[in-house]
Length: 170
Image (tube, rainbow, N blue to C red):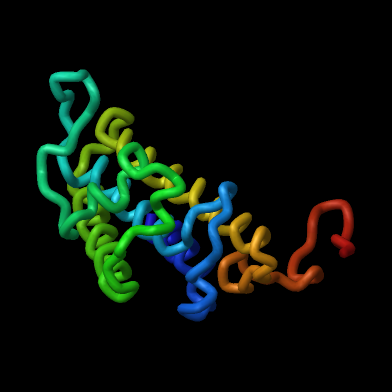
């Protein structure tokens, strides 16, 4: 989960504040909204003890660490076009929120049983973050922003290893 979190931020880290404020596009999310939504989703499902409500939907039973997080970052409540017009907390506050969520999630994971049932929401959050990292990557492509090297896999020289049967060629 920590690697996924680092990789997600690496996709945005090189962008200046002006490049993080992007024009509306129905095929992408505002980048900072998307980043904070990932933290909200992880906190909601892993840390906030969701239980079935009267309507049968799972609802968080504990408050968020960030004021107004449900109103701002719950994609079931915030329609896509509305995400572009939200008064969001400062980026530093959202980065702190994401870091605090990750720290608590990792501590909770460390104390959890190693069963499929116990790990379900951790896996859900991990897969969700990876999906949004892909969305942030195609957001960069849509906006004609090159992908920073730090966001990809480690660079390896083509001759860094060998494979039985012969050398690899690039």
